[in-house]
Amino acid sequence: MIAETVCSAVSAAGLGIAAVTAYRKRFLAAARVAAYALVPVGLVMTGIVGWLADTAFSPTAWAGFAVLGCAWLLFMITRAVERRGGGTRKERRAARAAQREAAAPGAPASALEPAARPATRRPGAEPRSSQGADDFSDIEAILKKHGI
Image 1: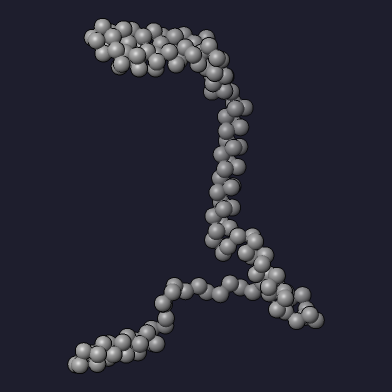
Image 2: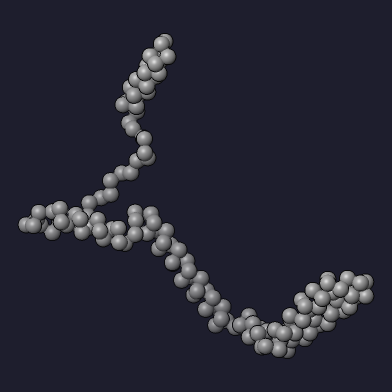
């Protein structure tokens, strides 16, 4: 009841502003303001305002929103863990199948377990000891090329 009254008052005020705007010969702006002013009345007439008011003051509805929030949070956490785990389920399944095929047919069951993931390195990253020698050889090649 209160929500309908407030929406009606907002619409009446908006139509008043539209009338003043039209009086000032700004008809396009007045039509736009009138359109916005009619939206609350339309929402009341369709029953959406009553539904929203019932939902806003319902503890069951808020509990439902909390459950939906928890579900969304669980989806996001599982996606983050899956991405961090290294690939999709299909990729991990294919890797396990390839490992099983590589294992000997008479091997014990422990041999069929997936091995730990190898440490990943950035492309071009090498240990410091070999990197220093390569850098100097590149520099020597450049200096020889220029005759120095």
